[in-house]
Length: 166
Image (cartoon, rainbow, N blue to C red; front, side):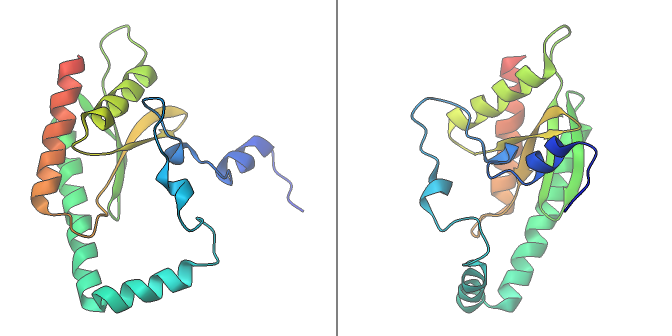
């Protein structure tokens, strides 16, 4: 049994559909995460075994180190831009950011519209989350064949679309 001050915090933390898995955007969007092996524990070991067999330990180490470095680099680039705030510093290859809304505009609504506009553009795909109750946009380098050029292109897409909305 657990005794907690606010049960809704526990429910939100252990939700089957956490904020970053909620699909936003156009109607009719297919959520492929619902078409795959569940996000549960049963098949994780098998997936890890296949991953190690297919790529090898040294290749995985190199890939992870690159992804971490590229993510940190993108966070630094966005932090240097006056109209962006880094909300959560990079942890491995994941960080979150917000774009500053125009004066008087709802910042959460603005960032939801931004993540939807980026995804509708089709060049990259990002997800949203909430940090300290406020909407933030998540960025993670994780695709096996991602390159430094892909992360540079992501910077271009993010800044281009954000500034077109302003």
